[in-house]
Image 1: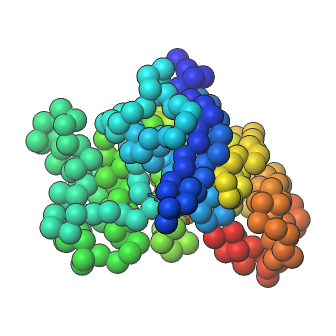
Image 2: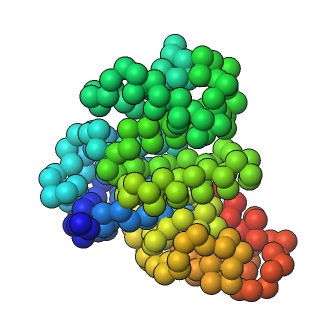
Length: 280
Ligand SMILES: Nc1ncnc2c1ncn2[C@@H]1O[C@H](COP(=O)(O)OP(=O)(O)OP(=O)(O)O)[C@@H](O)[C@H]1O
Ligand SMILES: [Mg+2]
C-alpha cells in the first residue's frame, strides 16, 4: 500500500563552517516522496544534491528541519536506505565481490544466498569476470558499476543514487538505466537519483526536482506523466527535458548554450550536449 508520507523532507537547512564562515549548502528544502516513487534531482555543481542525499541516507544531520522515513526520524544509516555514492568508495583491500557483499552485511542472508546475490548483481552490472579483482584493477566506470551493485544487492526500501552513471559510456549507461528501471518497477524500491544528465532525469523520473545554487533550494518540480517504458526520443519526453533545461537555465544565468531542443524535431542541435555539460 502506498504511503504518501514515505520519505518526508521538511524545511531542511544544512550549513557548514568553511574557513570560519558559514556556508548554507541547503536552505529550507522540503520534499515528500511517495513509496515506490522514482524521483530524479538535477542542479548545478555545488547546489547541495549530494548533501541532500547524505541527509536522506542518515549519513549527515540537518542544521534545522527534519527527515522521516516511514514516519520515523532519520538519524543514522539503516539497511532500509541504501546509497550509491558519487565516487564508488570501494575498499582497496577487498575484492570486487567482497566489496559488493558489504551491501549485505547484517542482512540476515545465509552465506550461500549472499554468494548468489553477489554473483547475480555482478552479472547485472557486467562485472562477472571481475569478482576476484581488486578495485585498483578496475577502470573508473567499472568501479562505479561495482558501487551500483553494492547499493542494489540488499534491495533497500529507499535507494539514493548520486550520479551513478556519470562515468559510463553511452551504451552501458543506457543499459544500466533500463536495468535500474526494471528493478524499480519489479521491486518498487523508492529511488532518488541525482544526475547532471537532463535526458536521464526525464527518462527515469516520475518527477524531476530542479535545484538552484547558493544556497541550495528547490526551484521547481517537473512532473513526468508519461507511461513507461518511455521512448527516449519521443516528443513528449523532449518537452519534459526542455522544461527542465529551461528551469536549470534560469538557475545558472541565461546562456545561449542552454537553449532547449524543439520537441519532435528529431535532429539534435549541435549545442545540445554543451548545454548539459554547462550545468556541471
Ligand atoms: N563536509 C562539508 N564541509 C564543508 N562544506 C561542505 C561539505 N559538504 C559539502 N559542502 C559544501 O556544500 C555545498 C554543496 O555540496 P554538495 O556536495 O552537496 O554539492 P553537489 O550539488 O552534490 O555538487 P556536485 O554536482 O559537484 O556533486 C558546496 O558548496 C560544498 O562545498
Ligand atoms: Mg554531488
